[in-house]
Image 1 (cartoon, one colour):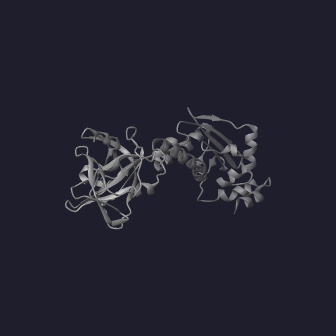
Image 2 (image 1 turned 90 degrees about the vertical axis):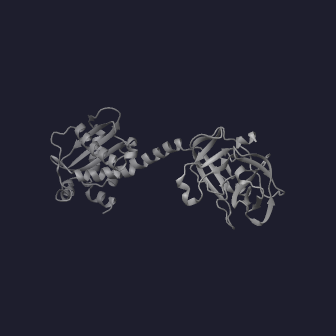
Image 3 (image 1 turned 135 degrees about the vertical axis):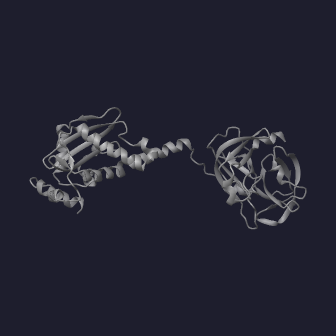
Length: 365
């Protein structure tokens, strides 16, 4: 039966006992909640104890964001056939209070509609009775017993409708304060700057990229005397690589080729990078014919000193062949060069050393 039907049938005064009679005889809703000599504060304490236990069992990681953790102000009104209770989360010790005359009238008018679902109670009472830190209940009462299972149903509906959405929203804001909102990277110009570097003699591959105002950049360990560069979109055309500057200890190199194809990336800095900053790395992991290039978003997860240079660690997987690829910061500029990682994607979780050389190290070449 819908809420409207219930309201029309039982809104007439004098029919309240008949409206509640079916609930009194329902064996699935036992009247065993003995309210004899229970003050309002005791009712609130009992309900909150149950609520805290359920929260601890089901939402232990979010428990500190739920209401009624510290104290509750409880108000209770007993009619001949119904109990009305309102609990407000407060800071401090549990207290009991009394409804004023206007509040009692609002509650009694709703209670006259008979046994109500929580959704019906929300419809009948003004909005001031409900919030993420205020629970209001109207349920059957057969002196001196209330129906505890009926209250639990209402408590669960209140949690679903008012509390959980609020808790999840506040938790999302809390998480976002720790993890910055991911920037909107544009991968197309990054991929367009990439070159595959290949040495047949050493049977190795790597990645290089064009950096505005610098030339082509890669790792020193990628370059061999026979290394050639080619575009992934045209692997049949290969260009000899000529090393301009190189430091094998830092593992950086600047080279040139006789081609103007592809775009250039802008140089940034890694000096201001901090833990949990966003970045995007690109390259050709284990390049195969037809590969488009690879981009992987990640976070700065740490720093590690290698050859007196502070390398950046990331959770973005760096795979063999990615070496020499650009790493772009949230500002869209190159902040580093990928250098170490795993031999294959399937083994990427077996190393924590997904390392990046800061682009600032170019000044030491």
